[in-house]
Length: 248
Image 1 (cartoon, helix red, strand yellow):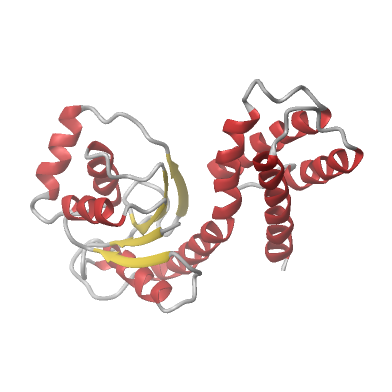
Image 2: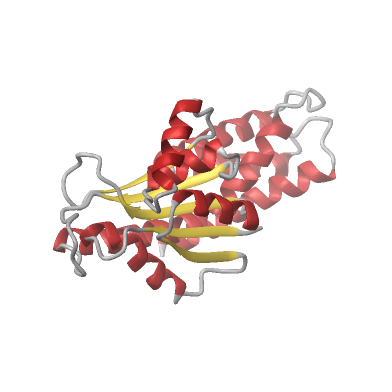
């Protein structure tokens, strides 16, 4: 599994250069096997070509984005695959071939060219200074620290979110007979979808405990195969790991 963390920036354009700073900081950290950190300050078409070469299973884009939020606001956004209208792609490519790059352009061009991974997340900071300048504003400096922690959290949670994606397909198969454990698993997968959308744990850990109890009681029903068992237990173990690490 390869995960690309891309710092999207416009070089030395005040707060719009935040993505480069983020990539420099994260590139110096031990983020785990398969994690690649790169500065994405070149045109969005070239970024899409890089995605086609690397074929990451997940993409995390971090940088400044102007969205009329309070200055320094930090926001995580889960990007879902969608069909981008041809005219939007054409306009985005026209902007991108000039060397222009923003988070939105990377997403639009990458989607239009079929290069954007199914799991794509953006971590955005609302800029204050957008004129040529080598320094970040105080608000962006504070936002950078929060953004870096959100990227670390995203990488930490990625294994459990990937497992949840696999289990949703299996849990929907007709071969699995109705059972208390399966019902709880589906509830748990719903909570993990909400975690993926808004970053909130909700009742995930309580549902994990109920699932473990039903498995111990043998309330799993018929139809389970080796893959089902391994993924169920892997999900429980990943949630155990995350609860310990995030509580710390």
